[in-house]
Every structure is written in structure tokens, then in C-alpha cells.
Length: 175
Ligand code: 4NP
Image 1 (cartoon, protein in one colour):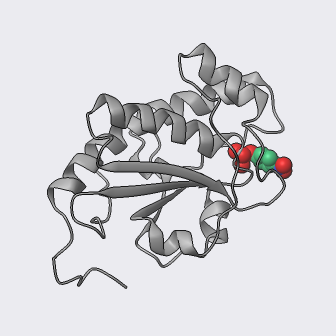
Image 2 (image 1 turned 90 degrees about the horizontal axis):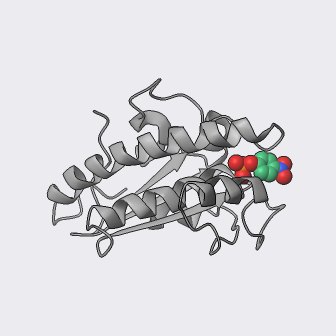
């Protein structure tokens, strides 16, 4: 199973999910993963946020198709407002999970062991891109939700392991 990098701070973990516009894929993942974390009783120790590498949608709510897909599955998409990736995310988060290979390149994390692919944790086709549903039909959003749900379950298992094995107290893990 793919492991998460150790926490930078004892006992807590911050995950940032990254896509292009921050109105479809990464906010869907943020909502589902946040729900799974709460179900696992880890919500006092784990924080999940999302951002996009592009600036077109800063401050906007989720794409209406992404929101409708989440709502139909019982999630609340209403609180999301899009924000743009900034360099500080590389320092402030324990891990960034990129939705596709271009997102990963765009955050500059190719050689950074704190930048992984979201689907590194997917039991089905691990390491693949989450396909961008923005220009397609509703099926694309259903497909993204299925990927995000099964992958979020696996990420929670990886979180349990990462929280059990925090970084060394001397900060040797820091860059
Ligand atoms: P996302 O999808 O990266 O999953 O949020 C997109 C949303 C908007 C655009 C592209 C992709 N756009 O070009 O505006």
C-alpha cells in the first residue's frame, strides 16, 4: 500500500488536494475525504483542503454538476469556495495530492516526496490521473465520484498509519 509521508507536526495531519480549476475534482475529493475522516473519528487530527493551479474560479462555488453529483450521493457541497495554489502550500501541508500529472508538474513537486498523485492510493489503476470532467457530460462526474470515494477510503487507512508513526522529534524529516 502506498504510504503517506510522515506528519511535520506530532499528532496532526494536513492534506491539500490539487486540481486545475478547484471547482470539480479537488473539491469533490475534499468533501468526500473530509466525510471519511470524520467517520473514522480522525477529524480532530486531520485537516483537508483543496486548491487549483489556475486562477479563473477564485471565490466561486463548486461547478453545479459536481455539486449535484455530491448532493445526490448525500454529501454537502455548499461550503466550497475555490482558491488558487500558492508556493506556501508546499511548506504548510504534510502532503499535496495531485489529481493529474499536469497538476503535479504545475505545483513544482516532481522531486518532492510530499507531492503525490491522489490516485496513488486508488486500489484500481493506482497512479492514474483523475480525468477532468469539466468539458464532458454528467457521466464524467459520476466516474470522478466513484474514484474519489474508493480512494478516500484507502487514504484514511494510510492516515491511520501516518498518525501512528509521526516524524522524528528532531525534525530530521523537514526539508
Ligand atoms: P477541475 O476542472 O480542475 O476539476 O476543477 C476544471 C474546472 C475549470 C476549468 C478546467 C478544469 N477551466 O478551464 O475553467
